[in-house]
Image 1 (cartoon, rainbow, N blue to C red):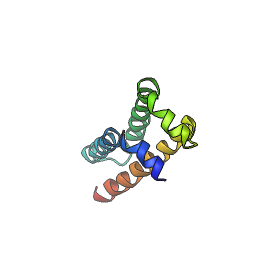
Image 2: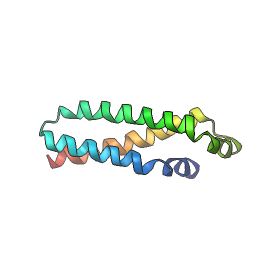
Image 3: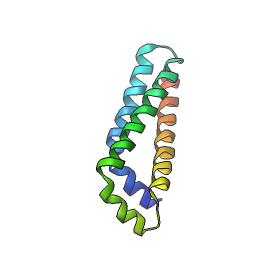
Length: 97
């Protein structure tokens, strides 16, 4: 888990910022149904972020490969952690609404 958090911390600021923007948009809309649109916004921003990582930050994968983690494992675990954080933030947002 510590290795995964090392990978995640490189992109956590961008990812959590997008999650917070989605939450603000849900609050501003006043409709819980806007969560679906926020989900797709989060989905496409994660796809763009992973594309950036894959194309421009591929030099760091040698470190993780030496520890036994493939790119696919890192991507899937990154998405799992990121969407878990988004779900928690979104749940708090919907309770505040």
